[in-house]
Image (cartoon, rainbow, N blue to C red):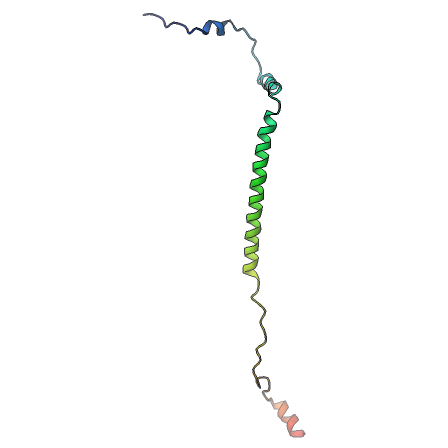
Length: 100
């Protein structure tokens, strides 16, 4: 059985004898090579969160206004005036009228 032939770039990869690198060092080098990368990403997240927060705030304000409108008393009641309705004569009125 024949072995599979190596890819053309394998020998170059095998010759690359770099020492192992920690994740911290890799991150540090990336940040040096790409300034502002994380600022842009975090800025987008902040803007999105701020927009969502404002939308939720508006929805809550509308919900509270609807609840307060449901709890508000109806329009003020105006006194109904019926002629002679308030002139019901009581016993004390009869005594006062008789003594006159």
